[in-house]
Image 1 (tube, rainbow, N blue to C red):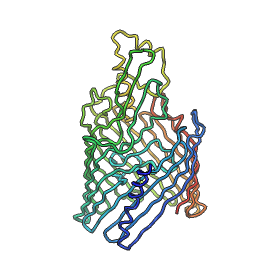
Image 2 (image 1 turned 30 degrees about the vertical axis):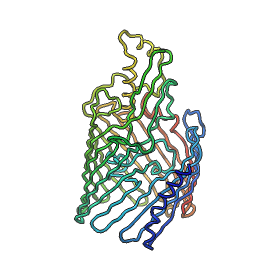
Image 3 (image 1 turned 30 degrees about the horizontal axis):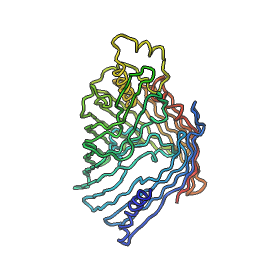
Length: 448
């Protein structure tokens, strides 16, 4: 623990090196307390309770150097487990001039111009399990280097390289799994052959129209579940081991943003293809094409963001079985299935893991259509900010609804109260997670 704390302290002091330029050093951060109260049929009435703090430091000479560090501390409980973390969210340094910039360190990079659906964001992993009143807290930094060239005022070329795989954290741990199934998920930076990633993006800024082209190679941020072993020697207590592993993808995309008063219009088109074949590899998804169209509208004190997302799954074939992981099992049907002559229980287990991957990646059907809406208002000179965020998948019929109200009695104090609601069809992803994800929440945050 001392070695880890010492390393974090060293990385936190990275921006201080820039302070030798005798320019600007800006500290900041916040302290916060929060609680999530379960609204579903979950074994823990207190879904999460925590106290956390952030300490940020920005150093710059305002000419050619900049550094930034963000350290987070969190104590409490989440889903019935103790949480005690001291993490470095970001720590990077940058040199820049009129024509180029180069930066390195742990950094959050979000590619793409869309907001609620982000198929082009390839370097920013997400902790989907984190209970927080702020969506941005779930974003995780990545160790990477960034080179940006600006040969002309209307064109910028960026190259990003990351030596490790820092996967997103899936919502698996709270799911009620069979007692004989063990699932091991990867967390943190992982090294190995092929775990590196790199990408290029060109941004064009024209009069009233911005556009970007990009390409990415490396492991997807979402780990895929693969069957390590399935031992049916004892039919009453089979032992099943599942592991989250990386799979390599190539991805190309285009996006744009333009203003047609009073709207800001955005669009995205993305193509993703895994390097491995889908057949026989349950962790590997299908190739797919995704598209997003959205707008921002600001009528008076209101801010409205609306987006539509579509997807076509390529080389699609029907799953041989419906996904059962996380659902209530019908033991009579399972016993009848297992007693069928020629039935292979190991292959059935592999097919079930593949089906769950397809459920998680929205690939059970050939086409998907979703919509998202966020409405926010600033009232009483920005002191009271009610908001509503909702996302609905028309294909899977998964619905997320999140009303919230923020109240600022003082400039540095924010009180937040809200509710997260999840619902879906029986056996669907939101039906599996709704009991432990539905919750009312409250937080008090003080910025400094």
